[in-house]
Length: 264
Image (cartoon, rainbow, N blue to C red):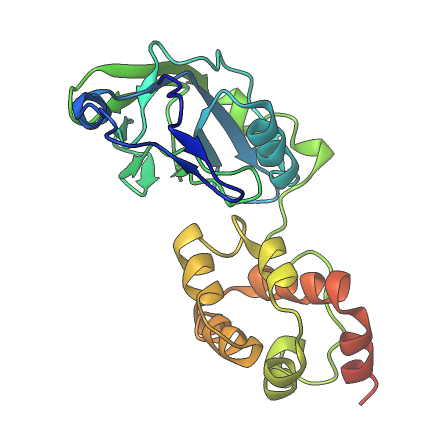
């Protein structure tokens, strides 16, 4: 960039006659790809029977890292070397090379630089059974280069559960229930019509009950009733733990509505 001296200055604008602009700027913008220093954060979800991890690939930006730490309040951070082996360009496709007994969803993701206020994408890893130790690598899908590598021991997933025990489907806090139906099933229609706002409730469920894709699909609906109907489409596939977590989210965010319905 360079400063040009205007030919004349008017009250509301400046005039530059016969400017000599170069088209090289456009060429450089096409060719130049900014490399961003990146970090990997790994969290173990608590209160889940199946060992489940969230893996974030983020710009090394303190505000974004803090936002993720705040969001993963129901998780325990697994300390691994966070800095990637090399910077990444925005738009790079990455995938996780993990053992066969580990399920990774989604299989790939695109490295992005999102504002701290936005939801950050992550890879979810889960394993019903796992080895005593395994290694997984984050790879650049295009170049096949290893971006980040870590060793994880089985003890890092199953130890220290005393601080937050697993809730089995038949355990945990039970909502008041005067019939065989769960609270959220008994008051389906009322909750669809009267839950407002819906987003704080969804935020509590994101990552534990709702996947990132499900969360985005629900929040894309225009009205609160439409969002709740979309949420209720998932209820038949839920176990008791998930239903209890929805009840707890409603109690935390809209307690007056829950108490009103319980009094009926």
